[in-house]
Length: 181
Image 1: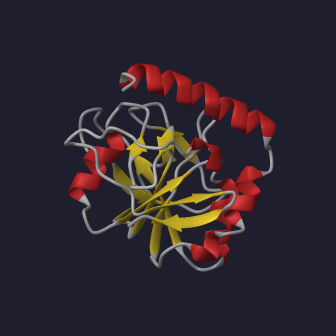
Image 2: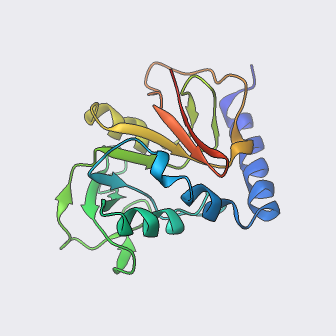
Image 3: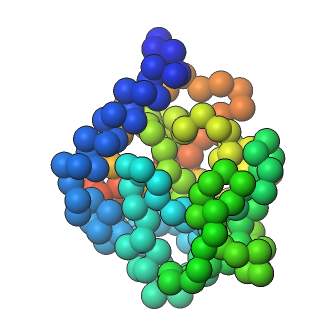
């Protein structure tokens, strides 16, 4: 099996090519928002680099009446917290350098967490950037539905998961929503 750091490098390069080849993928993925599992409070993310941009999805979910939030890294080795957010509200960089809601925003607990990723498999395996932020957060929020948000081309046959890796319940791509067994 390919070492994780080599797989991450290869998948970053692939995701960059997918992003460059399909500027409309995020809009098409947002068109499948109604297929997502129920959840009153939905955690999204602000895309960095070639991550699939969640802005169009945020707008669709917001207009459908779902409460939105974004993750906030307060400490690099701890689980993330989530703060309420709506499209257009101001953001500041958190401890990991990611755009996050201001400290005055309400802290909330999401029912549904959409996460960026580098690769996913048909069994709910997820390859992230390697910082462990989402796995630590999933561990403290076991009841939240975990959904990958990615390009369909990021699918791989099988990921080797480690004991701390927590599986996804499904993935939303430009081709639709797919639940995992």
